Image (cartoon, rainbow, N blue to C red):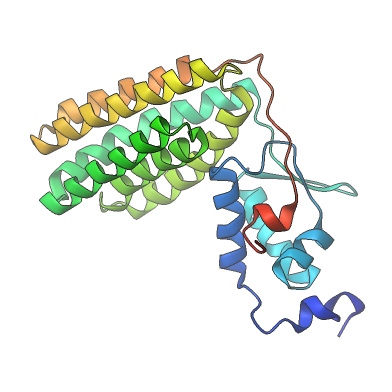
Length: 243
């Protein structure tokens, strides 16, 4: 056993798996708790998760491969800071695959699946109405992932999950700095999700695809490239490891 594998962290009997640590970090990003540029110090992550540093590294490598984290030699890991060009590329990729995913969803979805989408959109509206914009954005991402999961195309679904994680970084970096504008953007998203559900409910796949494409184009058009993200707080608290 190496020195870094010893101590309280390595001895934790309820240590999380690599998959669980990955999900905790991704969830914190989707919830806008880890802004772009946040430094992910291996020692702090190991302490937060109750594991050794050697178990943290594969998680960071996986996130780096998905372009969610940037790994720099001798400097460690940071949450990626997407450029304007990368932001455009992500939304371009989403416009290429999500119309196809929603068409597949229309062909496969049961009435219960459509109802779950409606419930997701209602939860998003409730979050917006209460002023919880971070939760609203997270729920908006979940709405799109729910369509992908029931589309039957696992490959595109995996790609979309990565793109939605990167979209969250983009929104944190380039969302409007003005609260009223952020709220209105989220409200528009809710209305567009309802319109999309209407097309799905009518089993009109071409219309659903058209509305999806327009929805994503509008989201991209609202990016404010002169805005700046917030800073993060304590890693253990943000990752949901401690209360």
